[in-house]
Image (cartoon, rainbow, N blue to C red; front, side, top):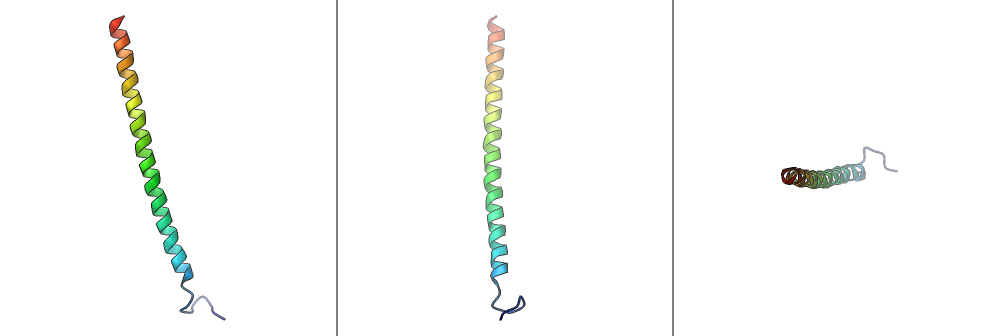
Length: 59
């Protein structure tokens, strides 16, 4: 019967490494999504600023 100190019990370290890899991939994907959302918000703010100033200019 293997205990937690035996050499054949490396699955916990493998799971820990896999978990960190998954965490890094998830963070990378979240950061990319946040950048895309920020760019969309900036573009819409600039668009509505130009639209409102154009309407104020023509009135």
